[in-house]
Amino acid sequence: MKLAYLTYSIILVVLVENCFAQNSLQYPSNIFNSDTCCWRTLSAEGKYREAANLIIHYKRQNTNVNKHSLNWHAGQLFAKAGDTKQAEKYMKKTYSVLYKWFGGSDGAQWYYFAKGTLAFVERRKNRMERIISKWQRKYEQDGNYHELIKLHSNWDKPYAEAYK
Image 1 (cartoon, one colour):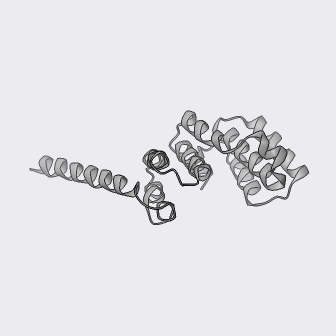
Image 2 (tube, rainbow, N blue to C red):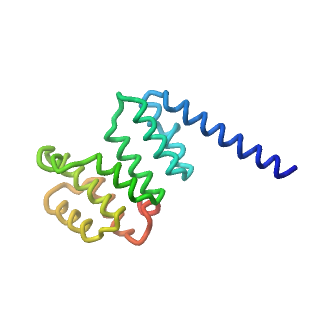
Image 3 (spheres, rainbow, N blue to C red):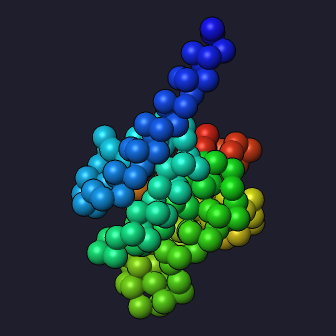
């Protein structure tokens, strides 16, 4: 009897979560990205891979969305799930050297932040230290800079712990 109830409970949870995911693909981006919905709710529950996959499906189904932001968040979520290959794939879609060359200080700072975060995920400490050093010499030490410093100071931890 207990096994049947447990099996029924598991099936019910899977069905509800699948329904939730399917419905959330229809939401406008301001609701999909809100703190109380969709991928952010899954992430808060520690379901990083599921949250990243939901973002990817949402991005494919909806054309009028901020793909840059969604790619970044998907990359972060894959990094939190420990999937370096997928994290790299989506994080790399959010920056290019053109940001550094033509984006002014904001574009350059994003470039260094994204590249530095990816260096942490890929476990390339020397690259991360070079990025931090360049940032210190050239740009304002904003919130993203401090996030890189925090990641660097938590080098021995996985991304999910270091990024908290």
